[in-house]
Image (tube, rainbow, N blue to C red; front, top):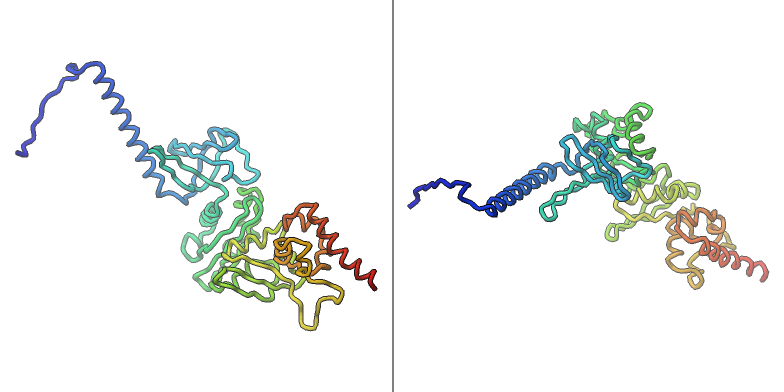
Length: 330
């Protein structure tokens, strides 16, 4: 028992079918091993920036070949607006995920993932590579704007200045790579109120009230700062919410001694004529009274608050009729 026994087998003793079966089985096992090797090689590289050559572009995705002759898939949804690739061009992207469905690994890369921006900044800023500065959070609207929160572990180093560089030299290359995506770098704070105020820059915030349970924040600003806080198309407030993890509502701050105009009417008074969700959206953008809405441009209401043009016209009619009735009564 336990002794090894060997017996010589001549291939010539096998029939044609057995040889074909052996050939197919061997080829299948080799292919499985190649797939396993590929999966194991890339599963630990998720989050790494990789360069590759465009092999072919389709409507929904682009096929990229890296230096190891491995196929990488760049879906259309993971491309920055303005991306257009020709065969043979070199592109950079971050490895987003590696799927291994049915033992057939597929490697997906992305250019819109916040990790792509973070890794590019790490490559451009030596202080981040040395561990003197860390990137806490990145929020992006690909191709438009991004906010990056950084912190320095050395008091002598300004984290924002180090990341931006002299006259923006360290971010120019990244901005070009991302087709003009504006990058705002701001100092990180563990205090949520301070962080929200910084995230809404360039607007100057007066007060921040937090509800940590529902993760909502009420932000009060001077009337002339509200549009800055919201940003073009609501981009600034959206990025601030993504960066801080809070749903941010913006309100106009009424200073001491100031009151609402006597002939003005709060939006809540129109709840029977205007849908409650529309009133809430208007209030989130700092519009709390009828005259404030009437004094706001039609384009702002359509684009920022995402209302249809007919809806905006109906709202304006309802609000304007309130003051027409008052004037006629007088």
